Length: 407
Image (cartoon, rainbow, N blue to C red; front, side, top):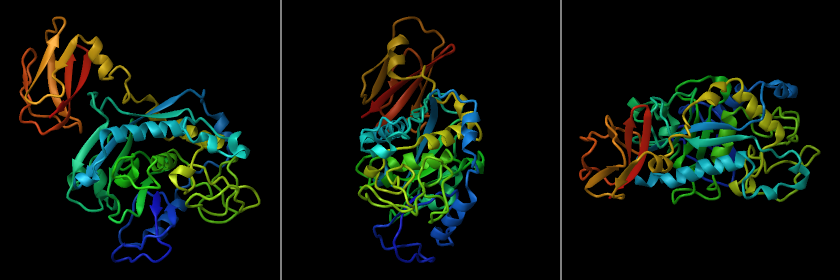
């Protein structure tokens, strides 16, 4: 969990702090409101060690080092428009996280030469799901308006009946909830560890100010690295210095040097704390986004080990079905929609007889729209709220997905 915290005191009654320069990241599955969360988080980290201590365990996995693609669903929970993250920023965020995990990030050359030999392409990628749990086309994004302040502090974020959004099957999707965690913006995110099991809150929670690169994002944490970091926890990584400060604790990864404590801001290189140069530019430290640039081969091993053990099922998910791709499907299906953008009536043109074609319209959030939609006729969208929608066309065993903009 990435948390910006004061050097000072947390009031247990108000849970407010004076913002300072300390940046702390902790990971936990639940924040307990009645208890100052720094102490709860420290205890939670100690209790949630992945438990892999034998480095040779990695090489014993049935892993051929092929690319693993993790389907992602982003649950955007917002109170008002100031908390919204644009679709293009969500897409950018998922792409940036993949670049980080594939060591294709543009700042990879900033890795000091002493660590470049252990820097890893993890062969892990992320994609916005295009099939939902029911097998229907989806943009991989849900949108839920709530009345709750600081919803990420409570159990409500993963429960629709409490004002949040139910998770999708955690065996098949990485659920990412983007919402307000703290009104002060001093908590940037948290994640569940794989040893907590597949449950309704399994996944990652990120404050909307630390997700994407849009106008709502906050520097110096607006380069997408909060998700890179939290997904690392979700895949079994600890912070690089271990569970607590000291040179006698470690993260259990052989090729990450011992490190006394976390780093914050962006220190100059080199820094030495336990007799060797510290790898403070690792994605699992706490530096600014612009200072992070690598995972190691050992961290790669642990994350892939997780994907062949506790999270093995997600490797077989159909959530990112490459055959349902939107634009490419439109070009090959014999169906065209126009005009797009549209104000009043959306029309369909068929290049062949598509008898038995079934149509429906969904909001980009995935919510089905109650419209009378018949093949071969105009679709009246004049009463729809302006925004992005998806027309789903089913013909025999084929699914076609068309995105359109209502003005």
